[in-house]
Amino acid sequence: MFENISEGTTYKSLINGEWIESTTKKTIEIYSPVDNSLVGKVQAFSKEEVDKIIENSKSAQKAWANKPINERAEILYNAANLLEEHVDELSKILQKEIAKDSASSTSEVKRTVDFIKFTASEGKHLEGQTIGADNFPGFNKNKLSFVTRVPLGVVLAISPFNYPINLSTSKIAPALIAGNSVILKPPTQGAISTLYLAEIFNKAGLPAGILNVVTGKGSEIGDYIVTHKDINFINFTGSTEVGRHIAKIADMVPILMELGGKDAAIVLKDANLELAAKNIVSGAFGYSGQRCTAVKRVLVVNEVADELVKLIEEKVKKLVVGNPDAGADVTPLISNKAADFVQELMDDAIAKGAKLLIGNKRDKNLIYPTIFDNVSTSMRLAWEEPFGPVLPIIRIKDMDEGISIANQSEYGLQSSVFTENVNDAFYVAQKLEVGTVQINNKTERGPDHFPFLGVKSSGMGTQGIRYSIEAMSRPKAIVLNLK
Ligand code: NAP
Ligand code: G3P
Image (cartoon, rainbow, N blue to C red; front, side, top):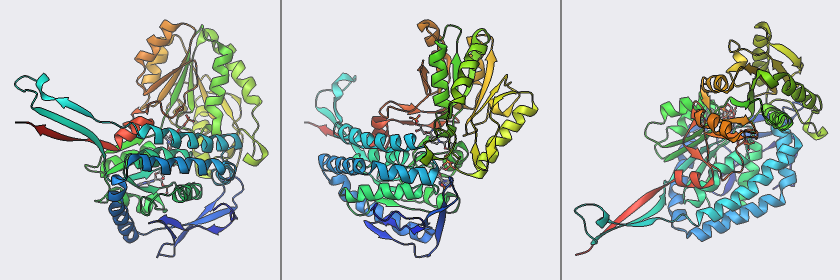
């Protein structure tokens, strides 16, 4: 499985328990964002093949749903153990395929091991309930409802480039333990990493057809898969633009979506500024800002702005910039196109008077960590998601102005508030229109059993292990009517 990792390998896809090539004989070349070397080629499946793949998934799912849940859990435990044996290899593949820094790559794989184990355990306690009718007027004890949870059927999992292992698993594992089969459409840039993950599940003992990986460009086969009549649930993580599009065409199919973000770090006058600066730098520049939960703007009260900005700048200057294999903290972005967009936002900020403190330096798709002070709400950088290592500082007069600016965003994923005053912390937190507020910490999704959700343009529904299992299952009521 991992012994033959070599540049230029043509990868087959896991379909019905076999590794197969597309009948189109078409492949997609994946180049490394690090050095533009050919990482490998993946299959480009056609719409006709998608029909057969989904049919296979649908027919295999019935036996999987009937398998005792402790047996399903055992297969997940096997997958977690296998994954744990291959952390280093998978970390290296992530570094090459998506230019993720070494620490973040290893952390992503290790976190996924824990995710799978926790999901297997949690899934075994997916109990239902019995409900008596007699607590409702007009009914007596002769009517009882026995409620269990049953799977939805075929789950379509679509994952993004920035966490191809963890965010594919965050869909696969909860779907599987609930008794669904999974069609996985991985990110094209990240597909190779994801195929290795699929092999882990395959070797762990997943029956044929329970996990099928359909590689191919989302822009080419995405709509066809999303609108296929035999898809029973769509679990999507990616950009708001694509998420909105999928929501429009998905018709009656239930959806769980985690989309873009513009997470604000609000810093009040009594904040522990060293703590705030440490968290803001880690939150803004981790994986070069390519995290949905990255800190994407700082809203700091005027009284402490100069001191905070100085602390942030000092920490940013210590970040190592370069390639993942050189141990860099800030690495090349996923593509030149992505870097162009970040540059566009930086140019707009400069043109409108933002004060460049550090950065605005670029080498192809490598963008150096950048801080802009005195960013105003007239600048695109105040509102748009760069998905790169650039941090705008917006100075505010008080926490009410901070709440107002934070809530004007189209996004509502997470926010942080830094203060030593618990009353102010909760005052701000309760008014912010987001899924999660972090008090005195950077915005982040983990730990993965916490509820994770976005509101407004940041998503629909709630992830987090138990929430995901419940989202990909439903109640089944059997009512007993005694004479
Ligand atoms: P993306 O361009 O939206 O792609 C996400 C996934 O959707 C990829 O697998 C992509 O396939 C697929 N796709 C594209 N068009 C499709 C279509 N018409 N039908 C079905 N699938 C389609 O996002 P990304 O660039 O991979 O990830 C970055 C974005 O995701 C950022 O906005 C980030 O904020 C967001 N994100 C959010 C979270 C969260 O938890 N909230 C987590 C991570 C990332 P291809 O790769 O083949 O195009
Ligand atoms: O952007 C993907 C999201 O899953 C980030 O996770 O824990 O790094 O905030 P985390």
